[in-house]
Amino acid sequence: MSLELFKEVEKRGHEQVVFFHYPEVGLKAIVGIHSTVLGPALGGCRMKLYPSEKEAIDDVLRLSEGMTYKNSVAGLDIGGGKACIIADHNLSAGRRELFLKFGECVRDLGGRYITAEDMGTGVKDIMTVREVCSFISGTSLEEGGGGDPSPWTAQGVFQGILASAERYYSSKDLKGKTVAIQGMGHVGVFLAELLTKAGAKLVVTDIDSRKLEAARQDFGAEVVEPGKIYDAECDIYSPCAVGQTINSDTIKRLKCKIIAGGANNQLTDDSMYKPILERKILYCPDFVINAGGVINCASELLPGGWSKSWTEAKVKNIYNTIHEVLERAERQSLFPEIVAVEIAKERIEQARQKKAEA
Image (cartoon, rainbow, N blue to C red):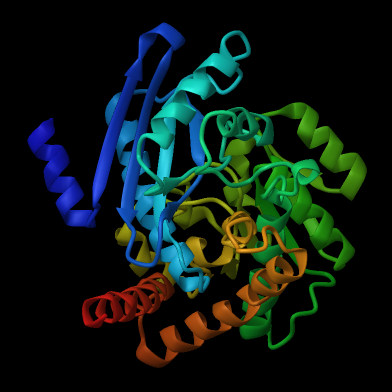
């Protein structure tokens, strides 16, 4: 396993992968620091019971690499990292003790990694971490932080949807367009609200029936079972739940013209590039379109602290970035994700050269 891990780390270009194990509080955590060239590695802490430790490691490596590209393309002076706590996200008894110990672990990394909330964790958890560690973001509004980053992630996805619609349909008017949202968590709900206000029709799914009923009542959404969202008649498919849901099976079933959602790692791997292109589906790279949340977290790291106006301007600019990526992809006859990674790496290399010359 160790040799295979080093091989994977070398392939992805990680600087550091750290494992923490404190059974007295039930903490099994992995922190992946992919790059600190642009600045300290910022990325959320995910809390999830994985089927295997191998899958947890793979998740951390993939997500932390994606954070490097996400932060770079968003124009942020921070690197990319991610943390994963292998535990039930519904844990209540002992949760505080677990996050206090996790905070000590992050503190011991000396600022190379800055943590924040992610899937399965929330502002309350981050506030617990803050009691023992200053290398955090995503703190509460009451304490001067940016609060829940989910609304900002949804805002960015919405801006990306507008840009991709304008590119595909020559208009960003969403009236009459049908958007299929997979996942009605925080991001999905905020996105549904924005899309409804813009006049779009919604088809939604989630594993939680209560969330589906709320979507039906609040947004007049059509509700489908989780496995049937891929067959929904829609103009735009918006994956906003777990990653890797676009695979060799589901891609054949999608009836959309555009894929634009808030989930990370939406594609199983680069083998999806060809079928997406063959079906003439416009794909918005996930780490570009869903950068609103990390932009909000990065705002807390500004010299003067969190700034709503700075965050709004950066998130709104996702519209222009999606246009840039899609235009360049068309001009170079490349898949949009390849172009987005190129743009991210170009900025990182410029920073690396500046450091070398200093």
